[in-house]
Every structure is written in C-alpha cells, then in structure tokens.
Image 1 (cartoon, one colour):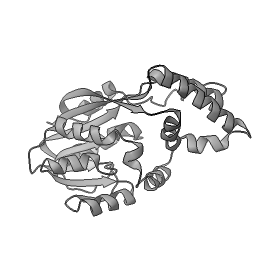
Image 2 (spheres, one colour):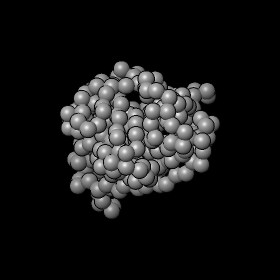
Image 3 (cartoon, one colour):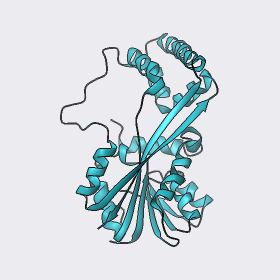
Image 4 (cartoon, one colour):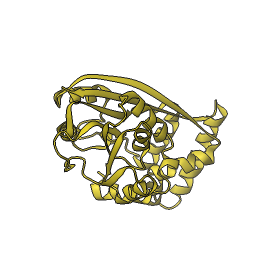
Length: 262
C-alpha cells in the first residue's frame, strides 16, 4: 500500500515530466471540461489538479478556477504558469472551503486512487452550491494487447501468482460503482460518456521508457542478481512481437461522469 506521503513525494518528483509521462491527461482534461459544460464565470474547484490539465481547460472556458493538490510543487508550478488560477496544496477530504462555495467540482483521474471515495464525494457535495455540477474522469483498466506484459510481470514479480486481495478489501473502482457512490452521496441524474485515447509508441525501447516511471524503476532493483537483465531482455522480445503484429499502441480508455447537486 502506498502511503499518502509516498504518493506526494512521487508526484513532487514528477513535476517537470508529469504530462510527458501521462500524456493522455491533457486530452481527457479538455474532454472533461467540455462534458461538464460550465457557463463562463462559473466558480470551479479542481481537486487533485496535478499539472493543471482540467484547470487550464476550465480557465480557457472562462471559469474562475481554484485548484488543489497534495503536491505542493505541482501547485507552485501551476500558480507560476497560470497566476489567474488560485492553486494551493490541499486535502480533498477536508478542503477548508465554505459550504456552497463552488458551482462546479472536477476531479480528473483522482477517484480511483482514493482510499475513501465516498468521503471525498461528501466533501465535494458540501462545497457545491445547490444546483451545482460534479464532473469526474475514471480510468478504465484494460490489458488488451499488453497481456504478454502482464504475464511477464507475474512471472518475475509474483512467481506464486497474483495475490488475492483480502475478502473485505474492495476491488478497483468501476464506473458502475462510481455512479452508485454519486447517488449515495446525494447527487442526481448521473450520466457518463466513454472516451478512448489510442497512443502509438515508436518501438520497444520507447515502450520500456514509458513503463519505467510506472513502477518498473522501483521493482526491477529488488530482483535477484541477473533477473533484472533477463526481465529487460524478455520485455524487449515481447514488445518486438507486439511491434511486428500491428504496432505498439497503448489503448487508454476513460469514463467521464457528471451529476448534479439536487
């Protein structure tokens, strides 16, 4: 389990490369704002704002944007680049804003990493004005043509097979469950829209470079001597087969969710 402090440190380290590594967030950020359809002048709170994909798109729509994130460096950089955005370090479970302070709350790729999404939704509802809108994006997990990589990772990093989660531990947040949580939190008329972002990569080394900041850089040094080199070799072989069979295309998908404070 990654602690909040570890997550904050990770995102602080990625401040200069975040949108290069997670290169789909800008497109989905714009899609989310279009989906929310805010009126010019709307008071918008973007939680888990990161480098500002959603906040920037909302600013371009004429919103009065407030952004919070657990990473102080991310917020400092966003404030420097876009002084029109009120950006600060903040806790999305306890934002500190007044009841009804915003017309729209957005969260791009945030809900799936929260320990308690229901508590977060309760806070989002508290800071929304009656009739306000909540708009969220949720990553849709799909192995697709990277099944070979999943099998390789299990072989090297979980040789006994993938560990079963404790029976009382919830699984990954699904779009159906998120809609249920929205209704349970007091939101009305949840609707959703699927988006897909196919992203081609040039060759096997490019896929390796893309994977490294997503966990491999921490996992490979923990392997026994020689196993890291063997994993690298097997990875490049698998990626080459993928490249030869239609190209290396990362098939990102997300679901956009919108609901209203009734």
